[in-house]
Length: 114
Image 1 (tube, rainbow, N blue to C red):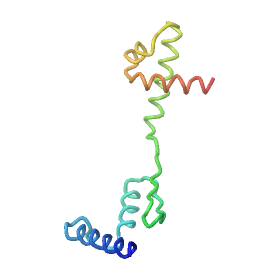
Image 2: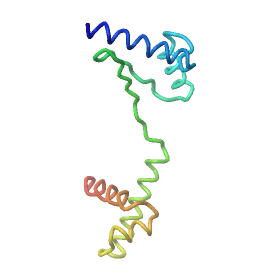
Image 3: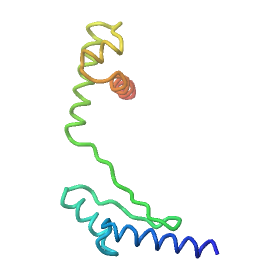
Image 4: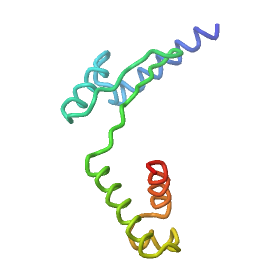
């Protein structure tokens, strides 16, 4: 009985989205998503059937400029600490132009690197 109600609910939900114009045709969504990722030169997501639904895994990539920016922040932190070993996180934040949590993250990464 519950399974039948669940199927009926899914069919009504599907039909409502189709009538509202959110679904243009059935069975093309995954292909359209993959095509959009390829056109944007992004890695394709993966799709898995999971517990009666679909799990979409979108790979995360960090833009090239982000890495360079993090490296520049780390260099600025090292330079500022060399000039003033007692400099605070807040002072580093205003000096470098990033948030205090960004400063803390950079310091953790620098400590990890040694």
